[in-house]
Image (tube, rainbow, N blue to C red):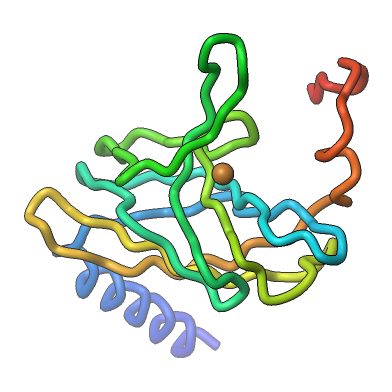
Length: 160
Ligand SMILES: [Cu+2]
């Protein structure tokens, strides 16, 4: 019992050492919005934090033909989204990808993304030294697509 515990701790130590040279990126609460049949695109959201200054420069997923990093912003009173070449991940700062803000856009979907499914994604993070690192993410599919398509009247928005 005791021996196996020590072995586990050692293994964890080795993992930490081998990744120390790269920007260590943690991903929290990764989720993808569910789609309806025939819907070709959806968004992935998560919280990213990098130990060192880095940038999210690309993403891939076997579930989508095209994956881009998008930004949503008000433009002359209209909510618009556009692809951004990269997303800055300042050292130690949690960067939120959320509805209405930055998101990973999954386009040319291979199939319907259903509530409860898991969507694997690979994020490509580039450190200040130009070194690229792949970060594997398993995002959980949440919700039904309808509320996202309809207009919300402001009810049930507070989630405290
Ligand atoms: Cu988008």
